Length: 197
Image (cartoon, rainbow, N blue to C red):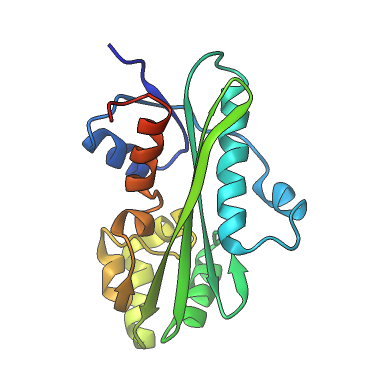
């Protein structure tokens, strides 16, 4: 029987995606200071930041579980040359959605596999989304309906829920938008011999 994969993430959707793909997964969220880590890479692109954060998370957890394979993941959002972090308050979420309204943005989902202090594989996948020019009453109703749930993702939406109503168009892999480039992860798991090729 194959050992379980450790997921260094708190994301229930990432866990659900991996389990739906038939993997036995044990969640073990990493505890790293993401903002401090990002300061070490001032010239990195948003996609590169997502990959490097995924690596940092995987390595942090792998350091405490000898011999186990750990999957780290992270997602960044960028629009108009600006990179965003998760909103801390509803007011910040409102301002974020107002800035993205009617505009195109990119989601970059990074992943990394690590074991015993070494990154075995890593990568990133990107998707592009355009928010529709929704009304202010719609926005207020959206925020009232979801409450603090909007603080759980960098874009203040979950595409698998009512967040989809914010959008005019979407280009890219659905799994990438949800926060994990699942097809690339499965390919990496095959390449390191964790699952059958």
